[in-house]
Length: 67
Image 1 (tube, rainbow, N blue to C red):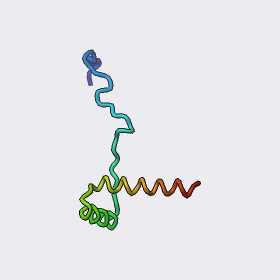
Image 2: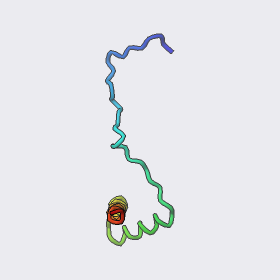
Image 3: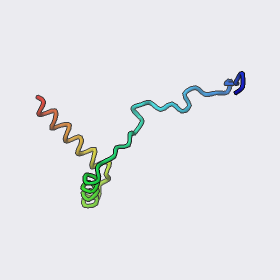
Image 4: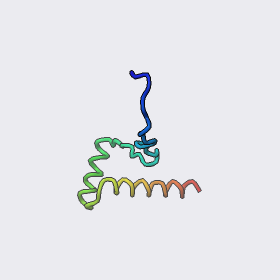
């Protein structure tokens, strides 16, 4: 290792990504994945849109029940 490094041309934060911009992969069980893929083929929707819609509905139901 060098005793000294030259960082005069360095760019701070060049590879920084805010935590909220990081997409975390979600792994579904095989039976859930198959069922959702079947529904996607029938409705011509993307898996991402279908899962997001289902989760939004579930969150809305949970909010109503909590009241």
